[in-house]
Image: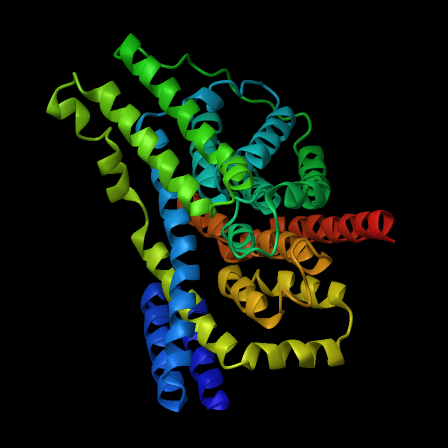
Length: 428
């Protein structure tokens, strides 16, 4: 049975990796793979009560992640509907490309930690289209935005899907992941940022025309600022909610989403149906990427069968005996995440290593959060942020390899060194 499960998973995984050449949505491959894996596992399992318990636990764990992601995606879409991100982008003003790069990199880094790396990439690249006319210059900015967004998402429990999975799964805690991964993520950003800023030295930007706000009413401005402030506030306060109440993060997300929904309805209650149409939270719900949500469901269900069959535990044991050093194993996982999706890699790692042996906030999980979150920057196809940049700016794969991959790898290895050094200094 184990060999059959492994073969089916590898076929499904290959279909996910080659989604674009095959022209088959990765959500379909994940769902078919999950269905086949659970069917085979169920037919081979003689203890039906155990099977039911395992499926119930898997469903509970998966639902917590999905509810959390759907809530976060909806809040971000609502802010975007109200042009809330203008609050940030309008404050980025300079005539120097080098200074602009530093501003964009740092803003992206921290904004990604508060929102998520995918949304932040879309927001910042959209801003670059307004600030830069030269395509070649803009591509450099897009590349550094991908690196900055992934670096910023890695140290925040809500900034990257993989870190969120580790947080919800109990492998890491919110405050500790910030403390332990921040410096490594910062190094991951600063090294490629410094090199790229050096390459852009002396280049200037044309003067920008003032933004046209002639049709904007005072109510529009108040609503935009309030929705932006409340939306960011909800996302930032979720770790605090979990710490105080000990409830799972998705409860805080749903609670905050409900409150934001209520406020938005009150703000729009006196507007005409035409004005309300594209500004409601209901409309924001319709804009979230449901295919990505379904993909997460499928891949998490598929990985669960490998965990319950103890196939992942066997792989972990083999790696420990063959490679031995956790630093090398996790670093390799980070590099591999630039080729294949980091979500199933982290999900598999969570099943490979037992929390009893590797308790919350241990070196393994903290280092996993950094490596899986930032390793995807090495290739343009290695992260959701990279895929978004590729679509928005029509970035060619080999252009990214030639111009950005070396910088991203240098940043990744710098962060690895900082993390390992920091861990040894603090823990001996």
